[in-house]
Length: 309
Image 1 (tube, rainbow, N blue to C red):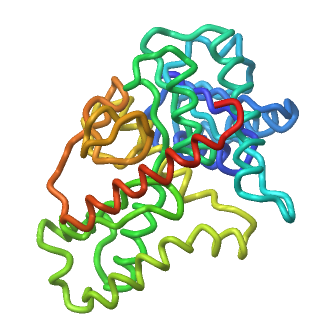
Image 2 (image 1 turned 180 degrees about the vertical axis):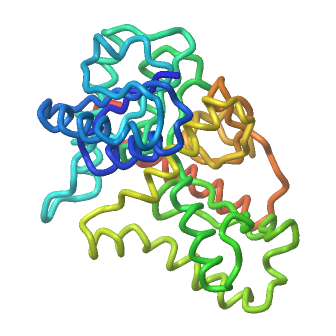
């Protein structure tokens, strides 16, 4: 399987490439970036480690060489300027992203290619890609709340002295201020997580608030997230490559799940070779379902304000 990472010269894209290389599941990784020297350097650095990790083809390229890709991972994005409003940043990133998906479409794509959006605001940009590319909507997915969910699980496991891979708890909705934790189905080793000593209502509020602020904490300490987001990108890519039918909180266009339509956000989704193959409407507590609908409303309001939507 061939994966092209657009924005692969940046922190997120290069970390994702390294995670994909370490796993050795995909056969081909192309690094594509507006800065050609940076793309060349990242590809060369990865290639130098190939003998110790996996038998893969790794190289830098361009849109023409990317057209036979099975998955396009879009990580390119702009950072917020001092005194810039969130909406201004959204509109600048929409402008950049529109050019990227236009270039992808112009170069040509395989009929069954998956477009995987990581750039922020991920839900807005996933909606834009789904609207513009003309692909079946299941073939356009966003990272959504995958990173939030990973942080949520990992932080809880660390605090409660549990195995991180056994903690199963989702964050759904927008990748942003209106995201929501789903405690109703949270488990550890198949048992209710909320019955673990220490995981009381007080702790639940505290750990969710810490999760929401985790991205800002990483940015303040090291300048930006990289390894965790790279790992979650690889998790989605591998679910597609291996047709795992894995239930993941990716973002995709909604068409009736929980009564939501014409908005991209994260709901429980079966991910396999076809991308977002099926939305699963698991029973939520009433307050969780209300919060999910409020998140969708906030995203629709943001989408209405976005220039060039």
